[in-house]
Length: 84
Image 1 (cartoon, helix red, strand yellow):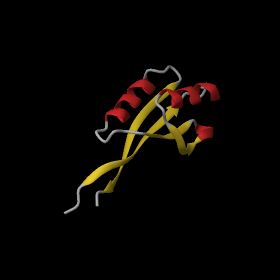
Image 2: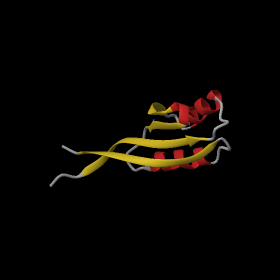
Image 3: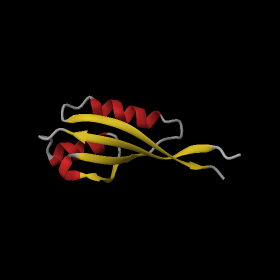
């Protein structure tokens, strides 16, 4: 039997259409995230967040992002990998 642990924690972020590049970068910086993909023209970003393994960082990141007026929404996307 294999158990799973959080290996990569990703937040999907939808920015408002009037969000500036500076605002988008400041949001990513706020959560100590790293842009890893998405669709920039549509304002949809996938952002990697470091976590100690309990999921607390990703939930805190979502809360912080959703408090910003230029963020339309933020959703955790927990990707897992098996433990050895």
